[in-house]
Length: 368
Image 1 (cartoon, rainbow, N blue to C red):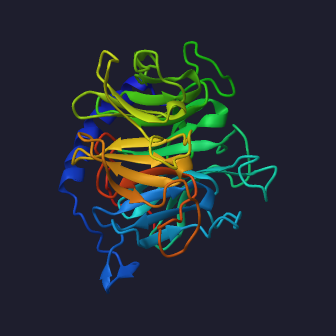
Image 2 (cartoon, rainbow, N blue to C red; image 1 turned 90 degrees about the vertical axis):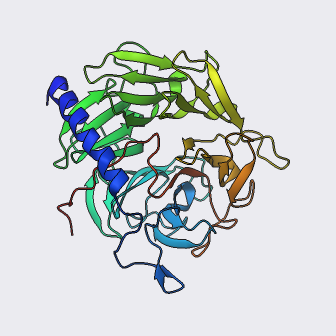
Image 3 (cartoon, rainbow, N blue to C red; image 1 turned 120 degrees about the horizontal axis):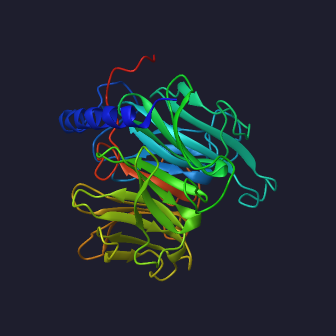
């Protein structure tokens, strides 16, 4: 296993390069793909990438809601050709990294026992799986095995950070499937040193530390690569079910406080400086359990409002909804448009916007 100190030095150096390349990278992919009006719109800056959880797919949509790219065949397909219970998706150059958690028992009445996926996959624009960690339908903790992976993050240098929730760990793996770093004790749920309780996300910070949403422990923690806890965030002890955490450019931390149906921003002292609740509109699910809140580079906040079956863009200052995909508290499926047709969207990101997120290094991948 690679030493933590050498990893830290490597990450800090590579991360600076990654931020530079992200800033200089073109907004549009030149690759051929789905088109709108005869003009390629795949991977266009301003589009949104959505993990459409119980529709078993990842979609890229325009700001108007038109689907311009997808992976997955829909809610009735439970084969490896789809991504089952997808919780997370990230665009890496023209590839898409996604985590297939699986469909838990009770989520779909046609699947009373649920169905496992347990893969993190990197998919080309044409839908070819070019890299995979985990085995489809296999639940485990052995070599190249996962148990409900809920998030994956492509790291500078070609490593992948995986939040392996059912195994109570966050692991860093290389492209040869070797684990090079781990936080959390495999199979042990707890809040002691080196322990996690149903972790739900992990992001690499520019310092080389890792920010983990430790959902079952109702906290986010920042750990260094020597596995020391540097800081803990709970919004002053008020969070319950922290589903996501990201570090903002101003040094604040944005938390998705799922059980309290809110996004909440805290400063370095863990004091609340901003919050937004997603269940206050008439017709809202009373407990929609939002799962991702991301502060965009334009200052707006993008929220995946899971069981309101929508993705919203909120004006952070006025707290008014600027954009909504699509109908409040109504789920469905359509192959052409996101309008009224999302089912528990778990994650959404704006193409080309890595504000507060780990930017991938756009090196030439050794893949077709």
